[in-house]
Length: 494
Image (cartoon, rainbow, N blue to C red; front, side, top):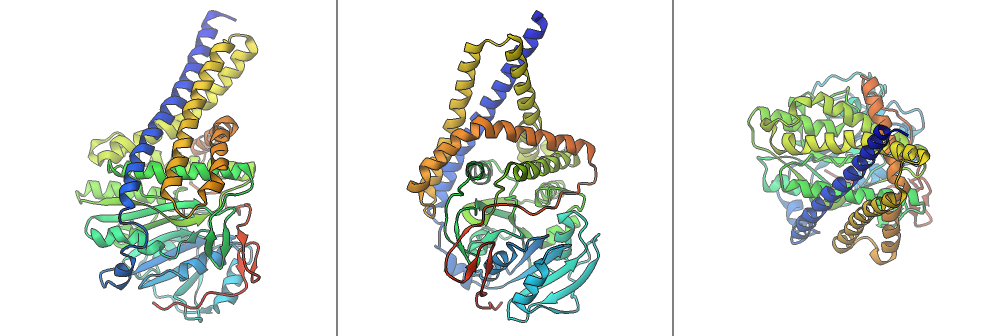
């Protein structure tokens, strides 16, 4: 092999190593910063202040917007948890976005739905035709919209916004399960700073393997499959620690994916969620940052480091690949759409720090990792790889990655009293090892595929398929696997 080719392969190998080490080192710094914020938050967290918020006339009413497409297996748990919120005034608006299974029929039987004349509160454009609007006859504050699905979840969110009546709106994926005090927990920043706070998010945890009854998580647990356990660790790292760490720099994109709380008037000012977006609320929070910075309005987006929502993760490689290809595709489209904000001081820390970091680590990163793995394989096959040096470098990268995972687990163990840490701790530590050996490399390949899709698909249509995951462990004789409780919780009044 020529010296030039060997030099190129060596440079590629060093590039991928440097990327891995730098990425983990940056995230480790965010973990440390997040740990300080989480510990400070614990001084007033938990149920302290919830009674005052519940009784206060200043606590704003909330419209919970749930979008569902073929969610028969989980929709009753989602609605049971949403309708059982301990909150003074709220409503739930469910949009059945073109489901082909029994999602609507199941909800209709459980809540005695009857058709009603829609009372629209906004006129955002909705591409999929609204077929009918229904109300519950059980005393629950539930409205259900049936519409034609167009393959874009954002279209369903806009349909729900057109019916929402309250000052704050909570976006929630069907299949997600709220904690009983979720709204009280996340609304607190809006009550404390009603002028500047425009959005808030909270910690989303993995539901797989937990004990669930009637939409209530009785005992958090770990899934049986190691692929899902690694994703538990990934969720702790990204959703809790990284976002909490960025809050201090006012560089937060307060989007936890399955759950978010927003000021409704600002969403209407934006024209709703961009229906072409494949990222939904992630695009929404970037657009909010851009709008408020351009118009010179002070604002804050807050991340509350408390578990407020539970959702399932895929337990097969096929499901994992589908999810991360879609997310990476959506991220590429989001960054292209908001490219004028990237590295632009006009947009503050989000423009200067957050968006460039996403480009370097989430867009270029998968390409660097995949290219680096190919170069290592070629160098090994051609004899150009110094095996001793490769072992040392790979061991160093593995050590940094394991240190990051161990730190994440330690912070989680110290700050989350709900998880049975002593029982789950060994499994989480092993998952941290597996994350760096095998999972990370396959994950990079899925993300790389998603970026290629972003270059070829322009309309932002998301693949809509049900999530196959291990069901939570039910308790009680009246609960069936798949989330269909045999009885509903008592009706709530607003």
